[in-house]
Length: 397
Ligand code: NI
Image (cartoon, rainbow, N blue to C red; front, side, top):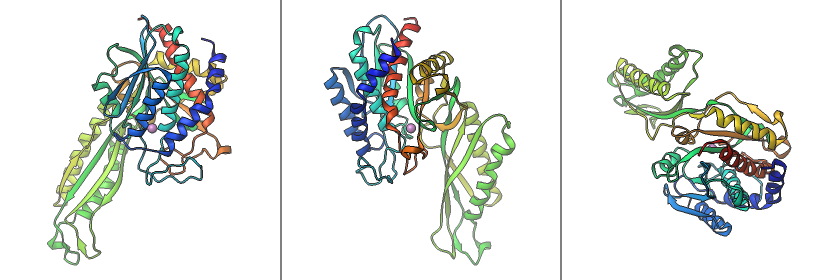
């Protein structure tokens, strides 16, 4: 595989990749509702003559190309958007009220379609099968887990998987990653503090859930500050607090929600257990009751296989213009459902830098002004192809 040729081929189809990205960007769809996006993926694969299985994981698409005895390698993109109102003057801004591709999954899908086109043109060179996973519901819906549960990594068994994420933390066209835990294990939490409501002028006749919830929010910060080894990363963030309607009424209950993060599932589960304890005790001390739930599916940490990262790192330097284009990143406490794949098989998740002040691409993901430097899209497609083809030469079948 010649890197310069691969980059040239990717650059030649850049307008096609950008057009796909903009079509997806205009029509953002939330988790498990990616019907139009899934249709666009399937239509594009049809045009390219690439076979696929669909539906998988409700709105997902699993394409396969290449044949031979070499190990099967998988490449993954996510397709869902976020419930955010986009603030943009671009002519391809979201056309759907309150929905936005604010995490770049439109780019991920377009880059993987770009890789599909490049791989199709090189199909004769492939030494084994390559699977392309277009998955739904990364943003809290555990779509990756569902893809695994429905057999995306089997038949033929996948030896390695790679995923790319647009990375506004790093300069445009750079590659960030690391071996070992890269992104955090994550759990959401919901706490209901039940008291007894009544007239605010007679607190002695009531049991006040507002004061109790306030104490709990403060107290929970000691879980990380006083109970965790300072050298072990963990986060407890209480992010919403709801209760009460009137200034002169003590409400019956207050509801808190938030998120817990750690770099291992053990640490995460330890935090959950201590949070449950503490909520119960703080509530009891204040004559209230705490109901604690951890809704949804906990995300494991995204752990990069050392060999896969070494390969991605080397190919990143080769394709992106040298060693200084690759960044050895510290772990990040964001969660990512690519973790469900790396929990099962070796793999590597990397960030493709997209920070470019000249283009206004400076905001973080999940921000209403989030913008991407589209010149990275063909680079992402080329990286996907390189990861897959180099892995087939490296991994024993
Ligand atoms: Ni994302």
